[in-house]
Length: 327
Image (cartoon, rainbow, N blue to C red; front, side):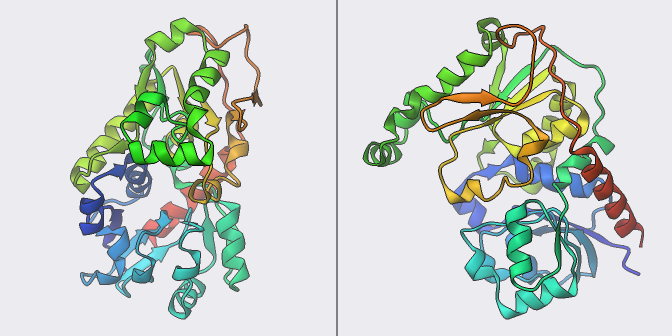
């Protein structure tokens, strides 16, 4: 019986050189961490193959991966594969004979999206749709002491405003060439259509993208972030690892589905979109919604009720992870 536990982190030279992290990665690791009585090893996702400590159990929910040549993980890692995503950008590199054999050994593989499930099945690997591990975060983070705080977190983050584009001249030039330069007004157009000015003026605007930090700092910031989400009046976001924890905790959330123009993003969402109250945005910032609210626009006194499609997936993940931790 293995009685030591590992958790994925994002500490290594590749992340130091890149000099930024997505806090959503530590939100995902926090979701896994909550099921273990202790954490005996913090193991960088892209260097799991180099781990040589005592055997550990690990819940392997993650995006796979920036260095696909470093997969599969060390034999000292006993994995539970749930909520994994294999991105289209590295699909051809990760599926080596050794990796396929590894996945088959630990199948069935729980996938965060239909794209990953279908790709694994095409390789002869038993796979199923599990939903995302962040749907379990209501186990730890309770909706108590609700505030009047409204958060807009990375809304339409790929449809950059003019000040944002000016700070990135190479990207601005590329967008002029590909015809996307005038998207800088899209975000403002969408927000002003659905949210009244009082709410927009009082809302807090944040980002999940942060300068590189250590794992210790990452887990601390993720914990603070989740506590804020749990007490928020409303959250509006285009980040799945903000929106899904809100669903798990019962915080009203609206997912703005717009501005995603690359294959890195688009392959990640199939299977998750139906969980959300959504604002769906087209190429010209034309938009529709899939939920109802009272009044002409959403304001500070508007009641937004989440859907409940996600609930059974969260419950199944909780049961599976508790069983794995206790085996």
